[in-house]
Image (cartoon, rainbow, N blue to C red; front, side, top):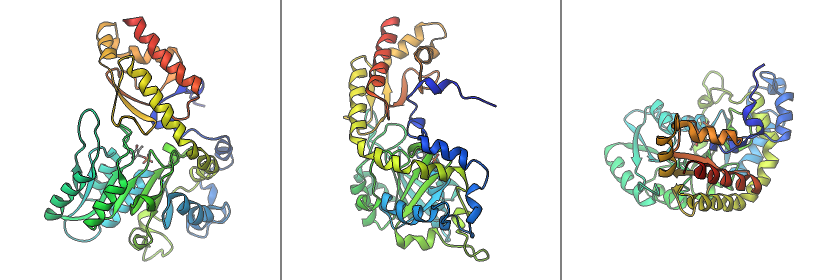
Amino acid sequence: MIYRREPKDFINIDPLQTGGKLTDSAREALIEWGDGYSVCDYCSGTLDRIKKPPIYSFVHETLPEFLGCDVARITNGAREGKFAIMHAFSECDGEKSIVMDENAHYSSYVSAERAGLKIYIVPNSGYPDYLIKAEKYAEVLEKAKKETDVVLALVTYPDGNYGNLPDVKKISRVCEEYDVPLILNGAYAIGRMDVKMNELGADFIVGSGHKSMASAGPVGVLGMKEEYADIVLRRSKKYNVKELELLGCTARGVPIMTLMASFPHVVERIKRWGKEVQKARRFSKAVERLGIIQLGEKPHNHDLMFFESQLLYEISQKVKNGRYFLYRELKKRKIHGIKPGLTRYFKLSTYGLRDDELEYIITSFEEIIEKYS
Ligand SMILES: *Cc1c(COP(=O)(O)O)cnc(C)c1O
């Protein structure tokens, strides 16, 4: 047996992990449904049509309402959702392209590359805010349309580096003007905050179960407008219940069962999103007083924050084996989640922290800086 001792009684501020912690019911589901292919007892060929366990109603009723879309599916992750869409749109002849923001996750880029799409990047505003603006989408779409057949656009909401939430309504209006369907990558949003694809004007939406929906994973959600279902969910000619882009079946076992087990909790927790934002802002303000400067949108609108600290960097230059001093000091204080070796730039998440934990982390930074100054 391999144990994962460390993070258990640690406070976790790793952005990758704060939204993926299991609920008690998901932990139960993990054991109950842990065997391989456990959900397939009553499957007649299509995952989303399984009625026992109630995957059918989850996929066809619960999820479309939750995501604000017409048609939903379960995927193996946000990236698999993006790749399914992109691949479906890259099918026909000729050079096809996609327009995406500079803050896009590597998996968006890699999906497009694998699908054979040429990639046009919408630049961010640079240091220190790195904002993504609708006007820039217009500029890049204009250029890309002259050179290629632009089949898709993508916006990252929020991005995984700065936690910036661009104005998707504006961006979707621009994409509509250029007649290009828009993918909303909500890996860091869906399951944390209320996101409705239709209200934001996007055509596709993807989310990540293990990132933001308290699930074991790998698992994700995919939503789309009805009009695109024929393209993205087209079926095999030979195996005619199998959807091609999903390779016939996706999360076939424990991942989907933890997603469904946590879902009622997720629905409740997104109502408390305002508190999470307040917490993030409180944290940002407090550490800025210590000389740890938050980059990205300010005031911030998400629990994922990126910091720059000249001070911590200078300390790391002075002390022995200094690159790891911050990691070591935080570990001593049972705080997990800032990557070993980072001091000058790092990101963290305040999601789900209790007030006393938030204060404890702020005090810890204070103590560490004092100790070395
Ligand atoms: C984490 C992340 C992903 C990848 O999600 P998976 O479900 O693991 O594929 C995609 N996009 C963004 C913005 C992310 O932060």
